[in-house]
Amino acid sequence: MAMMTGEQYVESIRKMDIKICMFGEKVSSAADHPILRPSLNSVKATYDLAQKPEYADLMTVKSHISGERINRFTHIHHSTEDLVKKVKMQRLCGQKTASCFQRCVGWDSFNAIFSTTFECDQAHGTRYHKNFLDFLKEAQEKDWTADGAMTDPKGDRSLSPSKQADPDLYLHVVERRKDGIVVRGAKAHQTGICNSHQVVVMPTIAMGSDDRDYAVSFAVPLDAENLFMIIGRQSCDTRKLEGGTLDVGNCEYGGVEALVIFDNVFVPDNRIFLNGETDFAGILVERFAGYHRQSYGGCKAGVGDVLIGAAALAADYNGAQKASHVKDKIIEMIHLNETLYSCGIACSSEGAVTASGNYLIDLLLANVCKQNVTRFPYEITRLAEDIAGGLMVTAPSEKDLRDPKLGPYIDKYLRGVASVPTETRLKILRLIENLTLGAAAVGYRTESMHGAGSPQAQRIMIARQGNIERKKQLARDIAHIK
Ligand code: SF4
Ligand code: FE
Image (cartoon, rainbow, N blue to C red; front, side, top):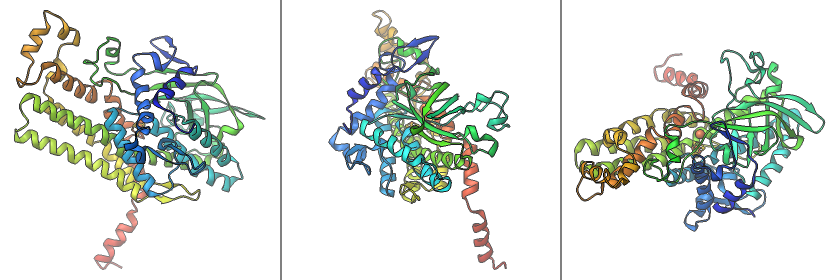
């Protein structure tokens, strides 16, 4: 079975014994809890869309290992065309879910580890690339969703991993056995990990020689022994417990983050992709971050499309669609959104082959892409709120709308243009609320700032990749300075 249907994916997650804690209780499965189910639905969409003939070219691809058709989310990029299609596919998935569909993180880890293990083996005589290829083969055959886990809690930011007061603030090897290693630590902010099959762990920063035990990368199944997670809160999350869909805004989809604890987890030898080679920790981080910064040029543009559409509908329902300032605000939103997409396409088109044979994006352009993502969705959000009006945060609940006595008053007084039912207007305002400051704001707003690295991380890369010396020489040449 090279590709699962959405339903098969849901069943496969339901069967796993993933240890999830929320509100102090154990949750039996992400598939059956109203707060978690929208997150699972978003990933389910990546399976459902791959079944549709009209999206086959974007959503599926021939595996370079088996020659079988696979879901693109498990593919190794073998051309700039693959990189471009990745971004287009992410935009499509963003448009269809209006949330984080999560699967890109694991996919980005696949491509980063593919080239890094190849080069590490050449430098150190290790066998990590073979380990990774075996894992990848299974991931493609079983159509796994993998969570790519990079972000350690990091404790005191001025200290390196091995100098922290608590040695577990970065995930590390605590025991080396004949048949594998035992690791302890945590990964924070893991979107979608509660509905993933595997977790692929990577180091979070470049490491020095003292940090050998922290330079570790591996994969384990989510139901591994001693691995558990604590779900993070989101704004308005308990609205999902109220029944109904009006107040949640996005009726079906979402994303959920968790703090994942590795409390002495055993990793067998054949699933280790890095183990002490500190000189490759930084390379792995840089490549993964680069791929994920490219990803944002696709997914955020797709979600942005939905938000722009919602803002335009809100204007229609208010009767404000012909006002010149409203038209101009929508033009501005489109301009900003397409700029993000352009950056995603540009860093993909300018990609280049690595020693392992897969393709890496242009790192400077990928970092410029993500730097723009730390700003533009905030402006798009501001403009959407401007157009929507204050009602998006003051409207009464769905329960009051359904109340036989109160409902008619809400219907009468909160109507915009006479031809559009009040409920329709409220649905769009709630969707804007969801995207700008509700549960999905994690994926569209704050994640735009901090996901794939906070703004300063991109500025460091831009400084490194920007080749300022060459620019100085260009200026000297023009000004005839010897
Ligand atoms: Fe994919 Fe975007 Fe979510 Fe990252 S933030 S996993 S790129 S949808
Ligand atoms: Fe992300």
